[in-house]
Amino acid sequence: MGAPLGEHQVRRRVGFLPEHFRFHDWLTAAEFLTLHAELYQMPREASRPRIQELLELVGLSAHADQRLRQFSKGMLQRIGLAQALLNLPDVVILDEPTSGLDPVGRRLVRDIIKDLRQAGTTVFLNSHLLSEVEITCDRVAFIKHGEVLRVSPLKTLVEGELTVEVRVRNLKPEMVAGLSRWSRNTRLDGETLSLTLPGEADLPAVNRYLVEQGVDVYALRPMHIALEDLFIQIVGTDGGL
Image (cartoon, rainbow, N blue to C red; front, side):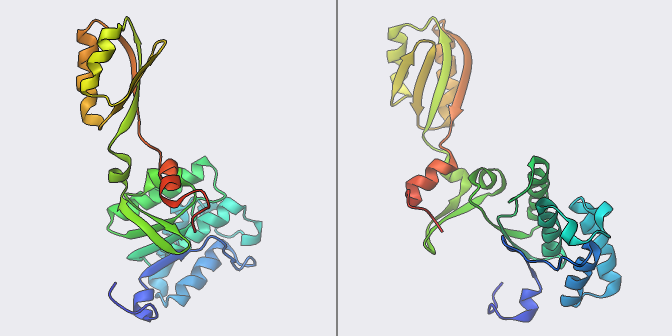
């Protein structure tokens, strides 16, 4: 935000949830958020409704007066997310925010991140759960030993050449040869036709060609390269961070 890292006024505009948090487990959820509101020097008239709003947002309203030592790992993760959003930050840094959460909790966090993004908040998400990154993020960076190897919009990374599997019947050898105008590699194994196309734009043409040739098409499944495979390609097999 154009200021030194130690600038207090700027740091008040940042929210942070570390992966390994150590919360004051003798406090209740409401007391914990009140403490952080006071650290942010938020006026009481502003912090009280904000705390209620956040407890509702992360699904912990019914546990507002429960001590954190009684919380499960997933509940602690959610109260941690609430404190990261307490100050209405412009930038939110989340380190493994879905760690320890069940599928419902992961969906909740994804929805919160989506709403933050739509509101104009910048969210930095660090995670080794690449499926979560793939669902949540619109821009990714691959980091190895502290060095950024590549930064790119996620859409650009996963688009491009793709493998397509088509379940067909009545496909004759001469028809397979005709697919070479679109496909770099074409292979027929029983009723499964595998193609390698430059991109999704060719899918309608391939489908029309097969149908016009009298081929029965039962399924057509494009398979983009997964983010996990890209990670291995870019970072290598000896790990990232």
